[in-house]
Structures are given as structure tokens and as C-alpha cells.
Length: 236
Image (cartoon, rainbow, N blue to C red; front, top):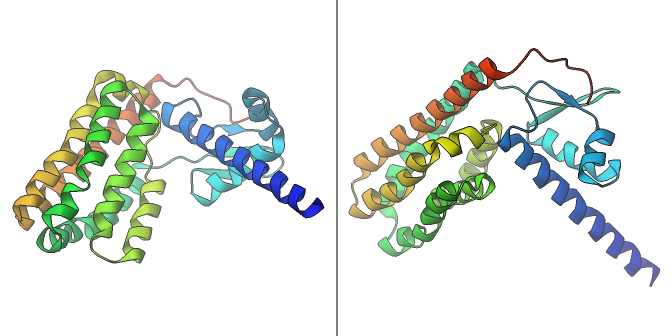
């Protein structure tokens, strides 16, 4: 009985850790947690109404994802991406994803592609209602499931890691402006092209889509830099 009770406690602790990690990711996406600022686990724990332990554990998950970095005796700093970083991540994604989309266009069946349409429509719906978490989760599923049709699990894993590292911060303003809807609609358009079997057109559409995402991120970053007051990097 003691072993079963221990397992239950571990399960509850892991569940709380996941909840906190998701809340932290949401804070990054909404711009509530700012790049360059150091946040202490006790401060965040007080805001979320939990103990510091699951916050520290969740932050370590985010460290592994490249979203934050540990600062000794202070807490965790939200990592900042430079324009060069994002350009390099986008370049690698393009080298992998564009030709893979062409290959999938030539080899996947219409049924396999149509099976992804509900996810593509979820992306649009989430963008329209301003659901940023839903938007990014559906976007992630769509792209990775589409690439998975190429049959290379390591390729999918590599792109998943690149997507985490080239994440979008502070999407709230873009969502309110309606800028995300246009990007969202590109997913259904991509499926329509791929179903026709035109691999070159699909590759070109994917190239434009990646460039569009890169442009959205750059615009948001410049806006945030203009709006942000000079800030201390002291722990919060």
C-alpha cells in the first residue's frame, strides 16, 4: 500500500509540474514573461498559488527546451533570440521542410492529406478567436504530422526541436491585430496545393509560409523593443 501511495503522490507531482510548465509557456507566448528578465521560482510560485518545487521542476523543463536559462542563486532568465539566431533556425527549417513537403506531395495519398484538414482548420479557428495556445499547439501538430508522412521520425524530431527554439514570444498584439489569421489560412491552402500533386508549387508555398512566420516574429520583436522600458535584470 505504501508503494501505491508513493506512486500516486509522484503522479500528482508530475501533473502539477506539467500544469505549471504549460502556464509558463502561455506566459511567454502572451508576453507576460519578458525575454532577458530573471524570474525567481518563489515569486512565480506565489503568483500561481503553488509551492516553489513544481515551478523549479517546470523551469528545468523549459531550460531543456531552450526557453529559459538558469541563473545561479537568482532564478531563471527568459532567453532572448537575436535576429541572427532566428535567421539561422529558419534557414535550417527551410532546408529540411521545403524539400520534404515536395516529397510528401509526390508520395502521400489524398486520404492521408485530407486527414490533416481538421487540424489545419483548428489553426484558423484558434487564430480567429485569439486562442494563442490553441493556435500554436494546432500549428505544431499540423506541421509535424505532415512531415511524419515522409516516414523519417528523426527528421520530425529535429524540426520539433527547431520549432521550440525559434518560438514566438508576445503574440497577443499580433492576434488582436488579426495578423495571425492570414498565416493560419496558409495551412489549408498548402493542403489544397499538395492534394493537386504539384510538388513545386507546394514547396514554393512552404517557402513563403516560413518567410511569413519569420516576418511576423521580427515585427513583434521590434515592436516589443520599442515599447519596453529599460528594465533591471534583478530577480522578480
